[in-house]
Each structure stands twice: as C-alpha cells, then as structure tokens.
Amino acid sequence: MARGYAVSQLLLTAVRLEVFGELRGGALSGRELRRRLGLHPRGAAAFLDALVAHGLLERTGEMYSNSPAAALHLDPAEAGTYLGARLSLESKLYWLWPSLGDSLRTGRPCAAMPEEGGGEAAEPTEWSADYIGAMEPLARTAGRSIARALDWTRYDSFTDVGGANGTLAFELVRERPRLRGTCFDLPQLRGAFEEAAAGRPWASVDFAAGDFFTDPIPEADVAVLGRILHNWAAPDRVKLLGHVHSALRPGGAVVLFDLLIDEHRRTGDRALMSALDQLLFAEGGGEYTFGELSGWLGAAGFRDPVAQPLGDGPESLVVAFRSG
Image (tube, rainbow, N blue to C red):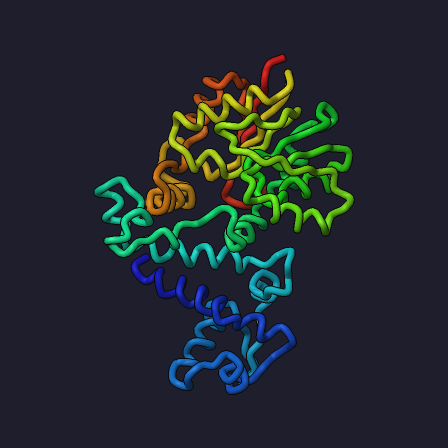
C-alpha cells in the first residue's frame, strides 16, 4: 500500500507521455520509442521495462509493443474504450491526497485551502472536456444496464438528471429505440451535448438546460440520476429526490447509480476511498449505504427500492417507484 503511489505515477506518466499512442502502428525499438517520446537515456529503459513488468507493454528482444489491454484502453484512437480521460481526472485527484490529514482535521476540501498547497484548478469541473470524457465509459455501461433493469414496455420517456453530454441517454435510446429522452443539465453543457448529438441523428434525445435544485425537472416516466447524489449532503439529497418525485408521472420510476458502501462498512474499498475523494475536493457529499439511500427515497415519496450491480463494475444500480 505504501508504494502504491509509484505504480500510480508509472501509469499516469505513460498516459501523459502518450506512450501507447506512439505504439499504435506497431512495435518500435527502445531507441526509437525513446527518441519519439523525448526521453533521456538514463531511466528510459527502466521506465519501458517497468511498463512491461506491469502488463502494459510487451517486449520481444529490443522491440516494444502495446499489450492487448493497453491497446484497447490506453490508445486514444480507440474512442469507444479509451480510458485516458478518466486517468487524466485521476491524475488531478492524485495531487489532493497528500492533504488528506488536513481535510480530516478540518472537514474542508484541500481544494478550498490554497494556502496549504491546494487550489481551485485541482477541483474537477463537470463541464470540462476532461471531466466529460472521464465519465463517458461509465455512462455507456450504465445506459446498457439501465436498458435491462426495467420493464420498459411500461414507459415511454425518461429524463437523465445531470446527464452532461447525453452519453447515457444516447446509449439507452440505442438499446430501447422507441424511448424519448431528455438530457437535463446546466446551460454550460449544451455545447457538449450538441456536439455529441451531431454524430447520432437517429437518437430521440433533447437537451433541457437548468439547475435541478432550482428549476423544474422535465416531466417523464423515468428519471435517471447517475453519480449525482454523492455530490451532496443528506438534506440536499432528500430535496433533490423530492424534485424528481414531482417530475415523474404516476407509476414512474427513479433509477440511481453510485458507489454504495456496504452496510457493515468493512468491505467495498472503492466506495470508501471515493468518499475520501469527495472530502478532498468538494464542500459536501460522499458515498452512502443502500440503507441510507432507502431512507432518503422513502422521505421523498418513493417505495420498494431494489439494488443490483451496475454491469461488471463496482457501482450499484438502485430502482424505486412512485405510487400511482
């Protein structure tokens, strides 16, 4: 655990230097790869061979090539499976973690304490290209999972609350073509949505601009909230769920996904570490248990919440219903 930072920086540095993109066309010698990347001879061989040792590169004699996993997820040309934007976001969070002790003592994010080495530039911004790109792989997975999580023959429309550039909504409509969707988010996201929609003329998804705390949420049969509730404190979560309840037609459903903490708070390390991420860069929020979520859903008027895994990842998908 104590040396985890070294492996983290090995991966993040390789992505930042675009090692995997350079190898897209095929194997290169260590000397040629070093020249293309602008690396000094000292350390270059150890760097490349460390990537081999960690399964990111393969080496035959003096020739280096991408491993299958790196070719799929770390080459920018693989738009549908590329994780580089997510790793770029992780790189920004990386520099917040040395201030964990300060945040634990103050309860404040280090991003709000520039005098102690933080700074607003380190805080993820939901309309930045990096942040949107980082969320796209999860949004695609979620769209496919949500398409299977409900009996959609009962519903005709949905609103993706906080839907960013519409990736989840487009994926859901791809799976369920008869659905009509609305991507509801801040006005700053309209341009990103329109850019994404231009490549999907078949998708019946519109954009509605607004703040989900102060503006009416577009009416629909189903509302989706993906990685939304964990950004807010408990009272705001109940308030937001109340707004969603009011926007749903009778008999409608709310679908949420987040990293849920297990009820005994002993396992689920991803959710617990994500809760500390929230502490480090946000004024409120954090991860929560299914029991806590069930209480908030009940307070907002929803019934019969059920949880299930979201695809093959660590997130959980929760479905609850409005009476009627």
